[in-house]
Image (tube, rainbow, N blue to C red; front, side, top):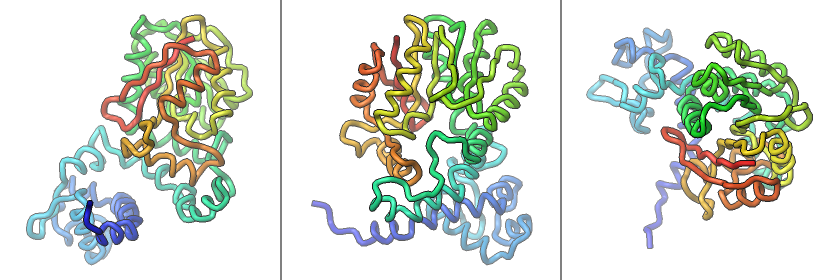
Length: 332
């Protein structure tokens, strides 16, 4: 039996400070200053234009948490911060902070007690299927977390050759559809999302030089005419916003839009059957509880049941390299 651990309780009580320290350091420019060669609290503070005391305290806190290193009075990047927090790194996750640490998501945590009492989010304007301003922020900021997954989905979806027609549902930043378009100039991508979000998608597609392969479909995935005859349908980070009956409504629509033998690629957090592992997928339902009316993360067996009930077959699951997410593949 494990020994009682009051330190674990203390760390959990103060866990919010880790989020606050990371956000503050990124906003003030601490990681950028260290990248430029400023290595003492005084030098970092001068570069950031703030008093030294706050910089010393927040940098020491980040050292304790493993996000900076310290030798004497000299601060430096760790391998993790160099790869994922340095603004010059192609893998920097700093751009995702405006969405992941938005006021609404943080507010969802603040009202979690009331949410649990209700059984659904206590947020007045939840994140679930409607056109809200946060979806534009998501489209603008989530590129660093989705690039590797997009390439993996395109590899899996092209195993039987480049699809002629791809539907990118809730296209957002456009990375998933663009990964298919880059692999074959003959692939046509239909990007569906809310009109405000598609403005971001269109800009990113045009910047990538892929506009000639694209059609844009504004509207809700629940109601817009999706068309038909798709070889691949991409459903990325969508089902977790809804309960299982609502997911099946969408799945039936996507099944009808696929060509015979077509494939639906679902990128999601998929916890193991015990629902407590692996940690990234297993902790994700709490975010859905806090921020959506009925969202969740579904196990593979739950996906198999929903997919079978909506006409899909040949269900497979893959762990996505360099990502905490999983890919569920199903065919019509």
